[in-house]
Image (cartoon, one colour):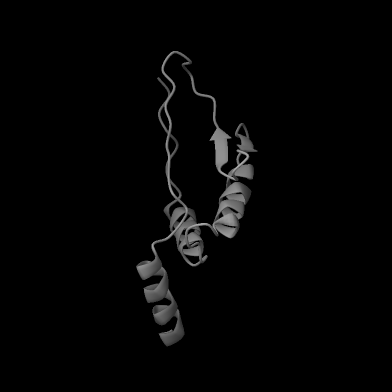
Length: 92
C-alpha cells in the first residue's frame, strides 16, 4: 500500500482560514462552494461535478475499487457563528 504524501500544513491552514472568512449562511453557500471547487481543481486526477441543487461532488480514484469511501461536509455556517464572526471581523 502506498503511503500518503506529507501534509502541507501552511497551505492547509491558509485555505481553511480563507474558507472560514467566506460568509455562508444556510441557503447562500455559493461562494464557499466555488472556493472549494477552485482549490480542488488545482489537484490532478480529481473529477468535479455539481448536483442540480448546487452541491459539489469531487471524485478521486484510489488504488482499490471494491470499497469506496466518502467524506461529506456542510459548507453553511450557523447563524450565531456568522454573527459572531462579523463582530470579530469588525473589531480586527
